[in-house]
Length: 363
Image (tube, rainbow, N blue to C red; front, side):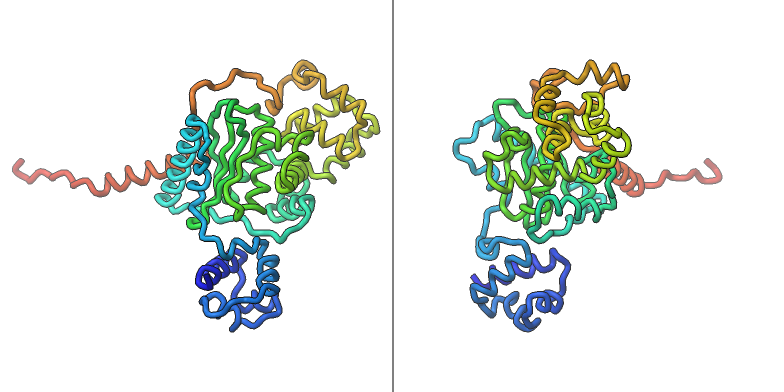
């Protein structure tokens, strides 16, 4: 048990990029004591263990549980529908291929840093600051997730499965993956990606997370565990930073009574769906409940076309039929790695081919 604790402690310390000395100093302990803990030669008191766990943003069980691999845990549901199991097996195969491509190209992703347990609003602010986003909109949240260590796999999954997304963290290989249901409307896919990115930042050690469509809808998320409410609050703040929203309303729109066209402008600006924008405006006090209900019933497409000339494509209702056949839709980064790996393999094959014989002077 001490050996397992020591191994987990060392890994967690290295994840936050602290030396034994710096880690010990932060906790008010000696570096010699931390060295003995990591070597499995000392057992911490409960008080010390709780202090260490809190500092590293880990649950105490993390240091003692010899858990199954993440994908084994994901697939362990005895009552899982056979079709869903096949979809999750396909997801696992895509994740393995993704890691193989990274290995072949030497382009392995680094994980985003771990944060201490802070309010979701502050987490959104801190992560935006770390990424240099300021208060500007995120034009491609899935691409942003990927370059920050959270690989995205989009896959068409039947409605009956009730899955919007899945998060898996492979602890042994230090690799994070998100499955997004590509049969969900575009707006919900965007929100699901931001929601699952919140899980990636705060819950990666808690085992696989399977989210149904309700947990990314404000009206229902309160029925779910606190970590879902946390991830949803993070997603809203991450996609729509409060200061920028206030600036646009007070300085640009210059109105205290938003019209439906104003809502459409804001949702296009931030790259979210109309319904997500309406929920955000209501939640932050910019839209009265009566106006919210009035606007929520509207179909935005006709007015958006009339005012802006095109559609943003980020709605929470389907504008196209479901994919009936199972499909995997590779991300841009996955495609880039695949093309790069193929080019490298072609170059290796060319360099290994024997040189053509040159003719002699009498030939």
